Every structure is written in C-alpha cells, then in structure tokens.
Image (cartoon, rainbow, N blue to C red; front, side):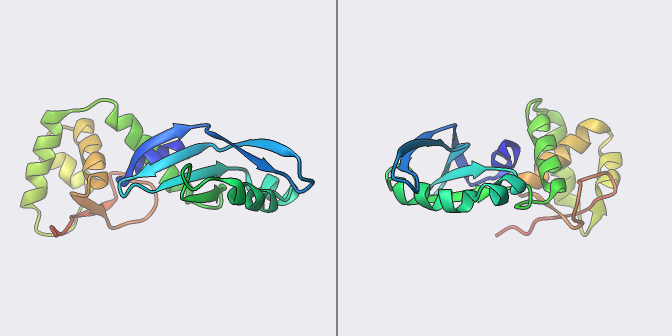
Length: 173
C-alpha cells in the first residue's frame, strides 16, 4: 500500500502508524493505530487503515471503523478510509513498487533522452520501440516508466507496464 501512496502525485507527506483514541462499542477507551496519515497537495489529511478483506469481514472491522471515524478529530484527519486488497488492482501495486525502485536510482541522461524522444512522437508506440530508439536499453525503460508517472506519457494498455505496453505522449494542458 505504501508504494501506491508514494506513486500518487497528489501525496506530499505520509505519517506512518499514527495513533488515535476512541471508545469501543462497550464504551471502553482504546487506541487505534492507522497504517498511514496522508497529506495531499490540497492540504487534506486522510487517515488510512489497511486490513485484509477476510479480517474486515470476520471481525466486523467496518463497525469498529465507524466508531474510530467518529472519534477522529478534524485536526488530525479530514477523512478516514479503509483499504483492503480488493481496493486496488494487483498490477497497479506492482507498477507502483517498480516506480519506487526506479526512482531510487535517478538517471538524468536517460530521462533527458527519453523526454526528447517523447516530444518527437506523433502517435502511440510500444515502450520497447521507444527504448530501442533511445539506445539506452534498460536505463530507458526505467526512464519511460518514470515519465509515465510524471505525466509526460500515458500507458494505453492496462496491467503491468512492460516493454510491450503501448504509450502515447500526454496532451499538454
């Protein structure tokens, strides 16, 4: 889940494991630890609880989350959301993890070469074609991947981003 958050351009800060106090159904004071408190570019703060869907159903966590949401101060979070493995596509999570890995090793030379090639595109191509034109091999693949998430390109195919994925330049607004 963290990789999905890190891949979002509107996320500016992530606080890991922030706690809040609430009263359970019997009125006892308890502490819930959210997985993340995410701050967005517009200033909104979202408290994120990540749970396996089976546990959510088996333990009635949605009802507990209602109590937690009601006790969460507005100064702490503007909203509370529950995320399970059913909330996102597995390929989206794999792509986000790859992006994280690719961002860890910046490559200005490959990024600049790919950016120049993007400006010369007149229509859709596969990532593999753009990589071949660049002459940078795997370095260009990583640069194209970063360009997709930077909004310079858009993937036309769903699923895992692969050399066969068709891409097109993103329209400049």
